Length: 79
Image 1: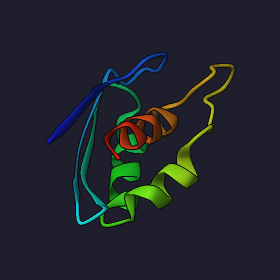
Image 2: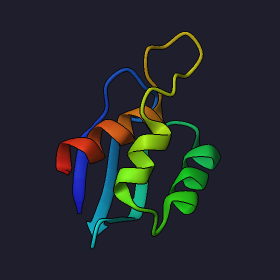
Image 3: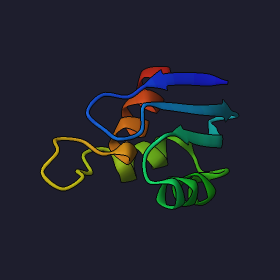
């Protein structure tokens, strides 16, 4: 399980696995529970590089980042 401490978001930590280049078990700690569970469900089995492509740069309101963007940063660092 990979752990990433987020910056600038309501979620404070993201945990995920990457197997054979695909994302599994994406879990966010804190934040908007339903939305973040949905992100995890939608990404299950998706290519890690495709997830980065889709989520990188997504912003939340006036913030410079979002939970999805933070996940993209975490995955990119792992890759």
